[in-house]
Image 1 (spheres, rainbow, N blue to C red):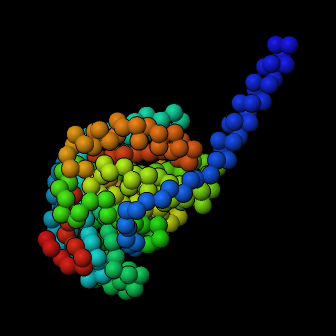
Image 2 (cartoon, helix red, strand yellow):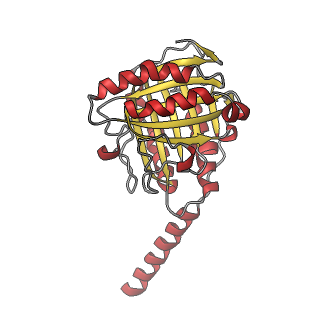
Image 3 (spheres, rainbow, N blue to C red):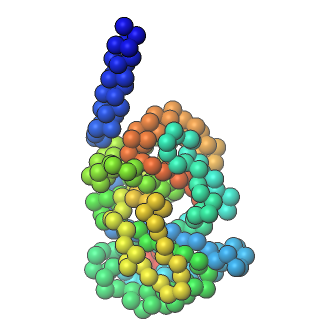
Length: 287
């Protein structure tokens, strides 16, 4: 009798487990408006043979002026990540939420292009200068590209809203999850759920195209990006104050989302952004 009961329990557990694996993303509706943009994320690691701040200053100094002169840019922002970043997202069983310190990113170039034409044909002079300059301050740079249908800015607050705390969250797709389901989860479930919370002052999502090293091969800089290190999506989250960001990551919303995240993701690395600097806005150089 005990043996039969055990078999039944195991059968139920197997059924539930199999069902969970086959669970599909839910389409969440939102009334929050959004804009589509052709975007890219360039993850940057500063040189380790120089003081970190020296390289960060070079990036926001002369290098930024090279990039900001590109006529094909709609927006260019630098996200300077906090030096001490262990991971803001609460622990999820079976998911990497602690940021690996040997792969910790120092900064992110958040780039939005005016159009596909701009990306292909404009700014060639600036690209050439920027490529040659990277070695002066970078150890590694990794480019991720997101097409407009997978890159949206959500109007969760007025454009002039005060933002003093923010985070960029990177997601790695779980082995066995289809690209289609992962994309639907980020675009149709996770992001609109966050848009509906009323807790955010900024919300941007990107689901990246398959990563290709050849898309960004600056000389004398590393571009290694093993399959187990790659990310397939990101979110940028903005808050009025740091206390609000802390409340968000400790909220029931995040707790409930984490259960779904475990189905689709093997890693969620949430970085604290120390400073966001905008150099190009609405197609115009402002700094």
